[in-house]
Amino acid sequence: MTNRHKPLRTHTISIQWKIFCFLLLFCALLLLILWLFQVVFLDSFYQSIKTNEVKSTAAAVIKNIDNTDLDALVEQLALSNDVCLEVMDETNEELASADILRNCAIHRMPPNERLRLIAKAEENGGELLEYYVPNSFRNNGALDQYEKNKLIGHTPPDSPSPQQTLLYTRVFNNAQGATCAVLVNSVISPVNATVTTLRVQLCYITGFMVLFSVVLAFIIAKRVGAPIKQINESAKELARGHYDTVFTGGGYREISELSDTLNYTANELSKVEELRRELIANISHDLRTPLTLISGYAEAMRDLPDEMSVENAQIIVDETQRLTTLVNDALDISKLQAGVVELHTARYNLTASLRATVLRMQELVKKDGYRIVLLEGPDVFVCADETKISQAFYNLLINAIQYTSEDKTVYVRQVLDADTVRIEVQDTGEGIAPENLPYIWERYYKVDKTHKRPVTGTGLGLSIVKSILEMHAGGVGVSSAPGKGSIFWFSLKIA
Ligand code: ADP
Image (tube, rainbow, N blue to C red; front, side):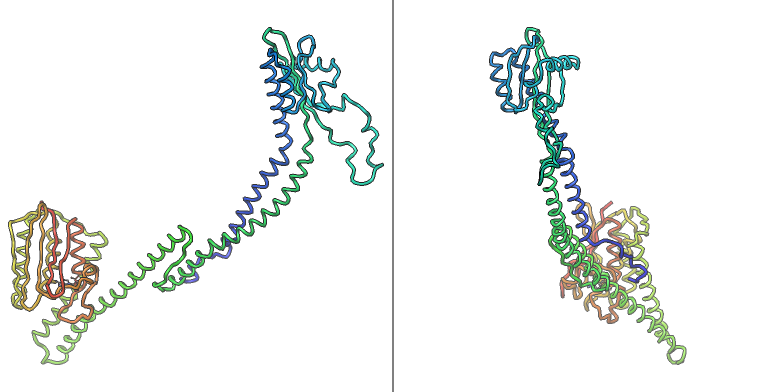
């Protein structure tokens, strides 16, 4: 890769930093939530909990107003909820009462104040919630004498945040329809002390969390980053053309999958590279040999009058023919594999068509002593492109003639099997070793790579056969063993 194509990556952040930033952000968010809930909103949370508590206490009293055990219930409620309770009827007579708080506002307020509260609650739709500072009813003057500047050391401030008390008044009717009222008093302890404790704690937690993020980010980044770095190094090796690079990067499923994919890619690339080398070697050899012969013979015929013979001219014609075949085959296979070939499908007599091809071929090779034995059966019709199927059959026939043994015989057979017809071309040649069998259908594959003449071919014949039959949704195959000849076949659906 040239520098021009290399993307600039100088501004991207490393995985280690990114993880650290994310962790830090996560911690900050967590701390923010903690601060909000434990410091900022603590007071309002506490107050709403207390309010609900006094309201449910009042509700419990109202439900049992006519119960003879009301006194016991009121006492029990006061103790368990840490509240003071006062239940009164319309004549301001006490029905039940529990006074357990030292600074209870209900039990220390003047009776007219109580009546004012009840009247206000009635106006308010039956309930009233008010906050009091208990000292407003009990002025012992102690605080008036307190002046902080007269004292030494760590002393409380001049005006301490006073203990607030919550007073809930609820007016209701009992079973007889008489108006009653319940007053509940709960002390709200200032949360300042708690907030201070939490704030100190949060400072420690913040420090610990930042430290924790750094360590965790480092560990995670190291564990995740190491295999990625390793894969990156191997990928660079691959990019330099070392296709035998092995990718190892385990630990995580995604990374393992990535290295598997890259291993597969490297393997495929090496195959392509091998094919490319072989292809160039084959093509250049196949083109060069006939070209050398043509130019050699043509020059000889030009320079030496004795060489001006029909045989030499025939050699030039043959070699030109070979070149034409090679170029045509290469064109055919490219078109077939690119999928630009159109099939002209029609129903035709396959048996008759093959018979004609065999006869033509027989005429051609008769002079060299070859014999093609056609073991045909009944006439079979297929729906296919006749020219293409003939080309495939011709390729198999040419191969069989080329590779058959000294007896120079080739057998062609038509086998019917249910709704398919199978055309077999058998020779008595050397056969093909099992290890070569899977590859003979590949482009430019030749078992004999020594290119000794006269057994030369383009290495494209069989891959053309395969492509043609694939286009027809037909089958191709071979059964062959060294020394036992080969049977190449193709099959088509009977029309
Ligand atoms: P070529 O033009 O080289 O024959 P093909 O694609 O037709 O190319 O065949 C590929 C290879 O398969 C050949 O090089 C040859 O080694 C082998 N092969 C094909 N047909 C036969 C056969 N009938 N007997 C033995 N080997 C064969």
